[in-house]
Image 1 (spheres, rainbow, N blue to C red):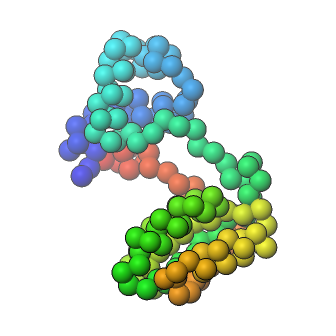
Image 2 (cartoon, rainbow, N blue to C red):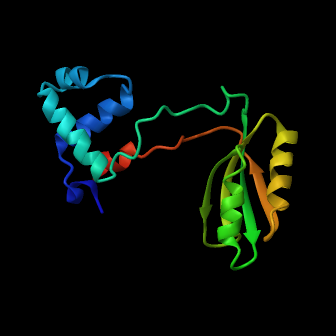
Length: 157
């Protein structure tokens, strides 16, 4: 559903943009920059959180700064009916940044991080050892052309 249909107006979009650009700013600072009451900013943030437009306020961490500069995308082919068990086991692998059920070739798309190429291979080997995982296909990332982002969706709506 487009943001406007979910009830986001221009002030909501300005708040989202400011929170994205200045994640450490407090309510008073946001209100000052937007020239609205602190209560208005709080109410808008509360509503957008309740509507799950905003899903977290946590810091975004850098795998590279945490000693894992190499990233890869791995597609796993799995036995039908084993996705729930595989999902539980995948959650125990700290190098797994995200995983998605996908259409097309493969069944589960994973983004992983490692210290080096050898470490990436070790992570893939752990995934392949999971009961129900048949095979994998992996590509190593060279650089991020467009990092993960959602704000442009809100701005276009």
